Image (cartoon, rainbow, N blue to C red; front, side):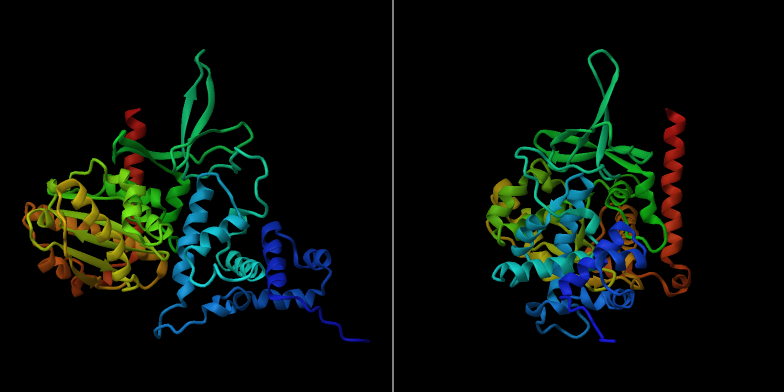
Length: 436
């Protein structure tokens, strides 16, 4: 009997695996649908990680420092975050739109042929498990937004009709657009707690911040922390001194995304996103703390803008639980933005930041614990500032603040922190239910 082995390309093999996962077919059913032997399909499944690896992209085989991931890993994280953000808002990007967004971020992709771009995109979707977060073809009906069932990160508000009867809720997307939730959409995850968070836009002072049961699942062991949980924690569970302000994770994300899409032109970047700090009083605070989410990792930035206003050299302190983030990339985007802010608000023409990077001690052992560590040490910094009534000199004290004493390190475990965080949210939930 003649030995026959199908000659499928890497992209075709990945398409088989994506379809298998998305449709939840059994191996026998998938083998019959694809018209390939079951043994061959099992071989594709066993080699899945190799098929979707960034090493398959020839132009990504660049020289990297030992121990660091290939250059595309960090670039792809930005696109993954964008796809999931749009998906959480109920908008699915198509393959062509993802390629357009990626070409402005990933080095070497723009100049490749269409077939090479599609081949990369297929592997990209597979290695980041994005099959359920995108649509294959563009929306041909102009003027309409392709919506899927809204997830927990959408802000959904009940709405009453003029006669008093309840209408469909309104989904508020990140861009501020309102989309009516139709009757066939699934119910939103039950609400756990909510609060009004400050906002520095010219036309908005506060916004409603909600945490649902689905959001709380991100605090469970081995899960990545949800941004809604992180924002609520910063607003409600971190006591800040009057000289300190804690930003949420959206500030750096907005600046960094604009910085890359505007081809690192800071004037255009500031013009695009300056509304997020339009009414923020920099001169009021001696320290501002900014969570940084980049390359699928959380770290913390501390700045003292008042020094720049007084004509002195301000500090930018970077605290990282794994020394993973490139401090230089953060400095170029964040410090550049605040230099432009200082120029426009206070007519300060030149600011030179003194930049220092510090590691937490202990360092985190698992990648999914970065958000947990960031919140813990952000809280510790605020406690230290409160204890010294705002007179703490952060550059001199930050190394000690971000080091857990050796006697306590045996008890410093991310699982314990996660349990404590869940308890905080459940206590607030009980109080809000009681006060209703």
